Image 1 (cartoon, rainbow, N blue to C red):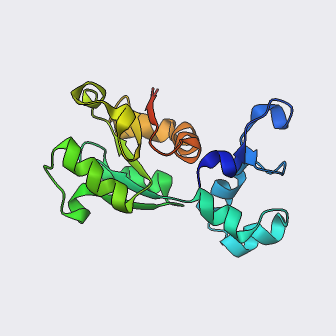
Image 2: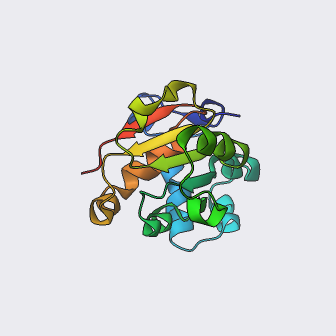
Length: 164
C-alpha cells in the first residue's frame, strides 16, 4: 500500500494540506498527538473518522544512514527508526545496503550528497529521503518538513529535501 491509498493532497481540502484519505483530518495531527505523548487510542477517540488501520499504515520503519545524526530519530519518534550500526550494516556499499534495507524498512534517510550520482537511485528498491545537510541544528529546525516528506514519500521514490 502506498501513500496515495492513505493520503489526499487536494487544494480544495484544507488548502492542500495532506489529510487522511476520505477525511478532512490532517496527517500532521496524528504526528503531533503522538509526539506530545498522546496514545494512538486517544487520537482515534478524538478523530473517529480515522481507523486504527489508517493510522498504523502511515507509520513506517525508517533506516538512518551513518551520515545522519542519530538524535534525528527523536524527530521521527512516531516511526520505528533504526541505524545502520544497529543493523550491523556499517560500511556496506549502496547496492547491498539498499537491497538489505528494502527487505525490512520502508524508508532510507541519508545525507550522502553524492548518492544520487553513484548509482541510478530511481531504480532503488526502497524509498530514499536525502537531506541537504547532516547538521542536527538545521535538521531540528526543519523537523516538520522532514516528517511531512517521510509521510508522503512513495515506495521506491527518491526525494532530495533542502534543510534550512
